[in-house]
Image 1 (cartoon, helix red, strand yellow):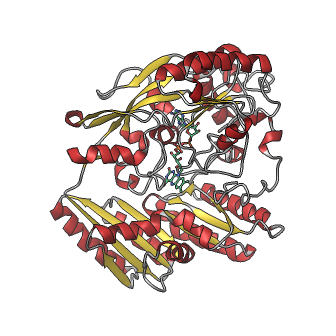
Image 2 (tube, helix red, strand yellow):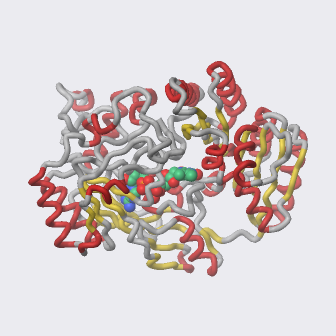
Image 3 (cartoon, protein in one colour):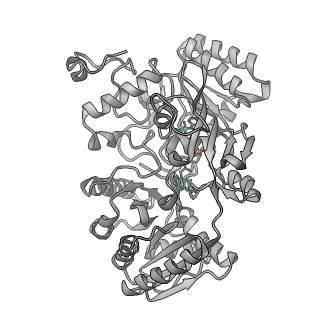
Length: 518
Ligand SMILES: Cc1cc2nc3c(=O)[nH]c(=O)nc-3n(C[C@H](O)[C@H](O)[C@H](O)COP(=O)(O)OP(=O)(O)OC[C@H]3O[C@@H](n4cnc5c(N)ncnc54)[C@H](O)[C@@H]3O)c2cc1C
């Protein structure tokens, strides 16, 4: 379950299922004292004293990520400043069989950086140096704790920016973005993080520092960088990332369109893409999301709108002017009753403020809520939104929709009040049913927030056992001892000794002679 509006007091207990402390996937039995003492000693030898936290109260600062619903206090927290320090800690964990979890800014919404009670949390937030901006190569080399937006801030004077822009871009780290293959409003045109990462310095689960990818395109051999991007911190730790920079466009135009219904707004989205236009962004919000954004940011969206679209066009001025005319026409043809063009950067910022603060804004209209994250083919939007509305009216659970309409990435916000008995459970039921809708319509259980701890239980709904075992073989090739962020992504422990032990019997892939168990 994805409850984000979480402070300790507002985030309720997980409806259904034991809290994570009781499950083996969070190391609930606690650390092996001798192993942890050895790792702590190694960390003290490699890092300055202020970079090591073992005091219980201070450890609790790190007990959850953006999904405040799940909490586990780690046995040890380290805050390295160099790749060498990361490698030293990882090597000690490897040598003594202690699990470890990487953490960037802790804004993840799937519990990916949820610590292990028996393990070490390696926090990369002190590795914040932008090592190089190479204008001639259109590349930047940055440390993993660098904040997403800071890359753009550093590149802008040279006429460049970093395109992937999660709504959390003011706080999330590039290391977390790489691990989650994060998306954002502008990924419709420019692609997700994976399109923009060309190299990484990487600490393997054995504590070796290796280089993956590089500045030159298409290195020979397996695409190990491709495997690492989106692997949710389960294959090792990125200690530097080489990213592609994109030229700042000559012209940017941002348009706000008000529609009576989400059906109309969805149809306008399909018509725009169908006309061959790829806007930099097309974002949609429904009436409830607009109400929340209005209350929080006074963004002045069209009164009475059942849905708004934020359409951003960028590129050469002549091209943008032509596309703008076409987008306006298509919006009107599909029922837009109000069209507003941002006349200056302040108006543009206000339009985006309403959209980008939408998650937090929902706190204005509901004490608790689940941020769901799923993806569907764009053309299924009207049907899926209708079915979500039916789920909502049938259950009495309010659902606000705010999403990247251009690439079909939904973020239904399922509202509830944890103080009212039964509401959390009903919200969880609706939230899970929304994921079923996504799968049913050819989509997936996560569009961009990842599987992490939260959604591993849903993996079996998308993948067969054989599919999951093939993925595990990749994981085991990097991490045969299952020490790197164990208990995340995969629903059940299997293969290569992932605790609590190997799957019994001969695996079908072994029997077919296509894979070995390590
Ligand atoms: C308000 C809000 C809005 C958001 N909007 C978006 C959005 O539009 N699009 C989107 O995709 N996400 C969004 N997110 C989710 C989140 O911000 C992203 O997943 C982000 O990439 C997480 O970065 P982080 O630094 O906080 O990572 P963390 O939460 O610290 O960690 C996330 C995962 O990355 C791993 N990890 C962290 N650093 C490293 C590293 N150096 N090497 C290897 N693994 C590592 C962790 O182990 C964990 O599994 C949003 C979150 C919030 C709270």
